[in-house]
Image (tube, rainbow, N blue to C red; front, side, top):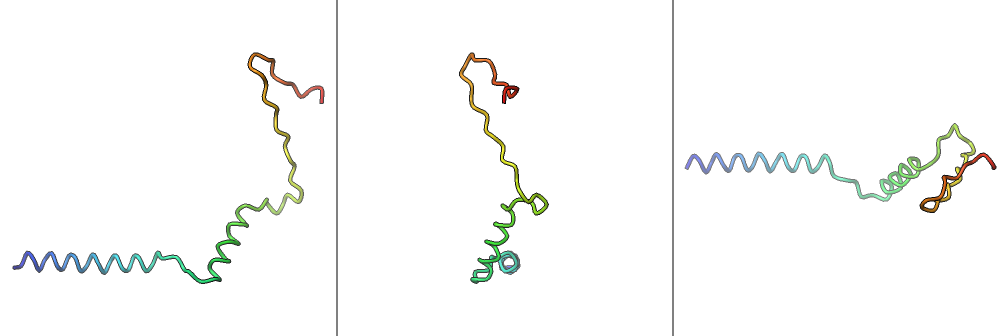
Length: 75
């Protein structure tokens, strides 16, 4: 009988611990939290504030197999 009581105590303590962890790490589901999450994502994707006009880099054209590599001297 004492083994069953011991196991029940362990299960209850684990259950309480699981509920506490779930409550601490759950995601809020309000409209305001959704807007805040969207703003955080847009700020992460935005260019740095100290660079007012980002410079675009030209993509290099792929070369044919066996062709010499393209040089940028003539441009």
